[in-house]
Image 1 (cartoon, rainbow, N blue to C red):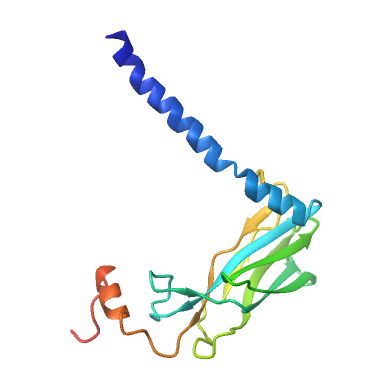
Image 2 (cartoon, rainbow, N blue to C red):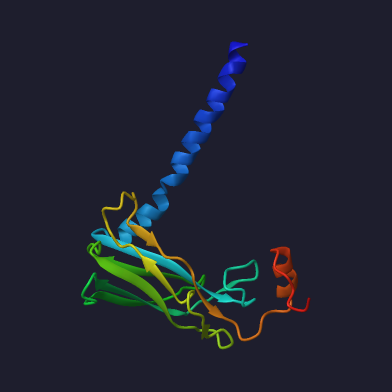
Length: 174
């Protein structure tokens, strides 16, 4: 009977340890620290909204070769304290090395240019992401992640109607 009472405790302990190991990602920390040991690395993704849904879906395509710009301005004065541009890799991921600490700044990463001819429309709200680039935020890693930024495709894919119905959105034809 005593062994059965210990089972929930052991299960909870194993789950807690698994959560701690997942929360501390040594691979990302090592990569980020190698890229910029004295500052931060901003990472994000750029996608093509192939359904014109306004958010990422199962049909979303990530854009290699897209250009983004990071700009940090001083609170209250709008003086630009740091700016950099980046291009996404084959998976649509960009990384920007950011020297120093920008805890006194407002920083945003903004879409600049798509590399996909039929997916170039910029929709306000998905064209920028505010990012906190402070080193004293309690994070173990020096990698900071921005929300994904998205361009709109000219015409939605044929499969989008069924997908959006699956998500619980009504069909426009109803």
